[in-house]
Image 1 (cartoon, helix red, strand yellow):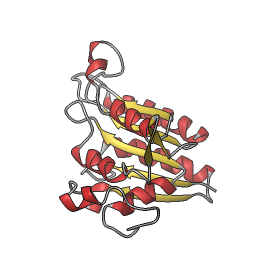
Image 2: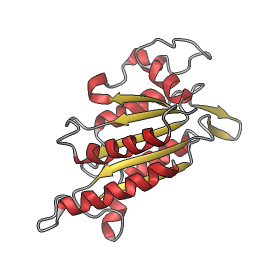
Image 3: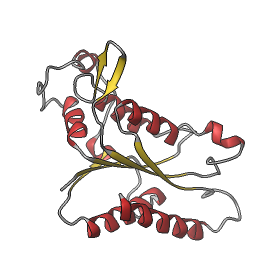
Amino acid sequence: MSKVLYVKADPKDNVDSRTFRISESFMQTYRSLHPHDEIITLDLYKENIGFLSAESVKMHKPAPGEYRDHPVLKYAYQFAEADKYVFAEPLWNLGVPAILKAYIDYVSVTGITFVYTAEGPKGLCTNKKAVNITSRGGVYSEGYMAALEMGDKYLRTILGFLGVTDFTTVAAEMLDVIGVDVEDVLNKTLGRAKEVAAIF
């Protein structure tokens, strides 16, 4: 049995968010195939994730098991204990929503999710896998715009830093391009999401 952490980073609800239409379909397929897995849904807006305070930064080097109930550090322990991660967020201004970056700051804690060694930093979240489900107004997976995409790229990089190197992206693109059949794009991406869920 696996523990899955489903991290949602969009202020819209499941009906209005195009990202969540895809991620919820992914999760529905996953649940049907893994009925005994524990799934923890973390809606960052409902969690009211804020920015790190001076106190929180000072506590970013806890002893093992220390401050497990701290309002910030609890997320790092939760992240470290998960086996699989599902992220769902739109591309905003070429990057992830600020609340997701704040969450990453919460979970990136030395001694919990990574450590410093004589050879440099080492991720502690190894042998885990992640899926990032994202929606984009234009095309950022190829062409000159690909170099400007810093949302999925950031997540892939920071999770690799934490030890998660099995990383898959499911992206719906061109959702804000005039003349594009958005429903067709979403339906094709839903199909892709279900395929990924079947092997996740």
